[in-house]
Image (cartoon, rainbow, N blue to C red; front, side):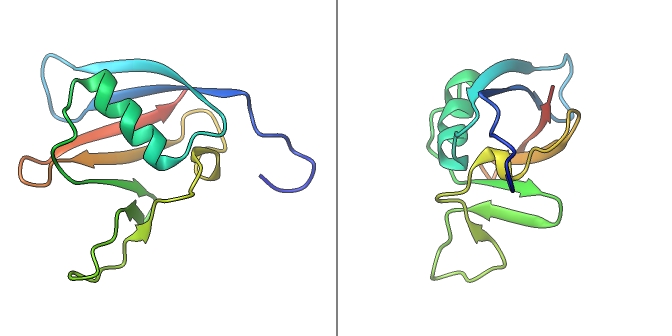
Length: 111
């Protein structure tokens, strides 16, 4: 946040798996200062994943995750990035993918 605008105390998020019927989703509250790695851990817990696989966040055309120096990409390091950098307005949607082999894609919506 810039200027005198304070970070919100928290965010209400709706996390939904894409292309799954019946729909599988969770509504969560997270602190306003949560980092992307922190959000990843929360998603793992609430969605029942076991954190065995890689993940990536997609915010617009940018991707954030854990870079692998052996496989250079345009992906940016998620470390130190806070959720508030990406969520400005209600209804904003960004993506989260877990387990690239199975491609569990999620939509995360700021409510």
